[in-house]
Image (cartoon, rainbow, N blue to C red):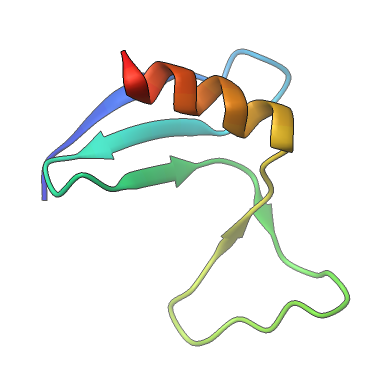
Length: 64
């Protein structure tokens, strides 16, 4: 898989950074959510918190 950064959040109050892959998928990188009521992670999985507003910004960047 190859990825290209489309939204840099690292320098914006700890927001995740988002990449688009050559498969047409998004890859998120950010602070890990380790514990939350109702969160069940399988081995090898990690969760990253994304706000709705953040996703709107990312999708605008993805469309460009």
